[in-house]
Structures are given as C-alpha cells and as structure tokens.
Length: 221
Image (tube, rainbow, N blue to C red; front, side):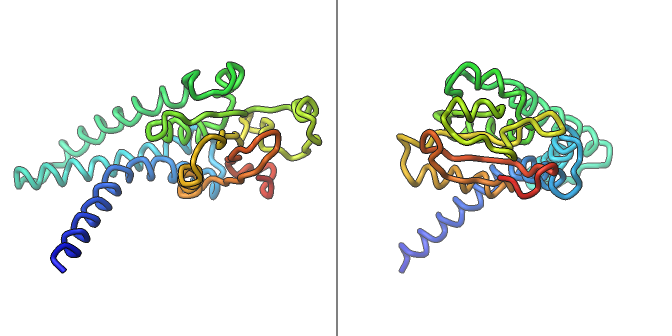
C-alpha cells in the first residue's frame, strides 16, 4: 500500500513537472492556432498573440517563484519590466525557429529551402517538436500541381501543400518509416493537441500528413 501511494506521488509530481515545462509552449502554439482558426488573423499577428500569452505564463511562474522564495509580491513597475524581459526571451526563441530548419531535418535541400514558404504556425510547431525529437524529418512541404504528376499521383485541386491566398503552404509531410508506432502516435498526438490536422497515409511512401486550416479551403486536409 505504501509503495502504491509513493508511486502515485511520483506520478503526480511528474505530471505537474510536465505541465509546468510544456504550458508556455502549449499557450504559444495553441494560442496562435486559435487566433488563426477563429479570427483568421494575419499569420504574424497570430504568432504575436501566442507569444504574448506565453510570456504571461512565464511571468506568473517568475512571480510565484519570487513570492515563494522572498515572500514579497512584485510591484507594478517590476511586473512590467519582467514581462518585457520575458517577451524578449520568447521572441529570441521564436525568431530562429521561424527562419531556420536544419538540413538533418529535411529530406532534400529543396525541402529545407521551402521551410520559409510554410505558414509560420507550422514552422514554429515543427521547430518546437524538433527540440523533443531531433530525428524528425520533413519529406515534403510546398508543392505545385505538376509535382503530383511527377510522383505518378493524380493532381489534387485542393491540396494544402499549395500556397494559399496568404502566400503560405498549409501542409507538410513527415517521415514515419523506420520509427515505432508509439513514436508516430505521440507525434500525431502532439499536433492534434495544438489544433493541427493529421492524416497517416501512403502516397508515395508511408508518412504523416500535417496541416493547418486554410480559410480558402475550409474542408481540405
């Protein structure tokens, strides 16, 4: 009985620690997806909204830690300065995540070059996941109708791999071959948790298709 209570205590501690460390990222990504889906904001405004929310979470963490260690609450001026510093910290994380994809995470050099043609929410989601899975590999990103013909597939009229009216592609393909079913399931669960669509299928090879809602083609995946 004692061992069961101890295991429950450790499990609860682990879950709390997991929530504590992931909540700023969840608010950053899910907040951006929420603003995109419900309000159709400009891509960069959605990212900015997620950043503001994530900074608030971090500020609450630091406020609680300061109060717990010192017993003193922050005054308004210190809160403002702290929030500005944390916002800069979040920005420092986001900027390279939005602009750079390592060659080791792209199947071809062309895929690496297409990274900035993806919607910023997709880019930030991928870069954040790479922190947990450095072996993540993008096999396809931006496409044109003729690309399907070259792969021997029927041309799709409403593919989210195509650039949408905002100028960005809204879909990527990730390699699943050579990885365990549990790993692939967890990857899909991550994307669903932040509000993205996933579909496991075999086009030219087994892969996970991940997409962001397009207001041009609301029903497309």
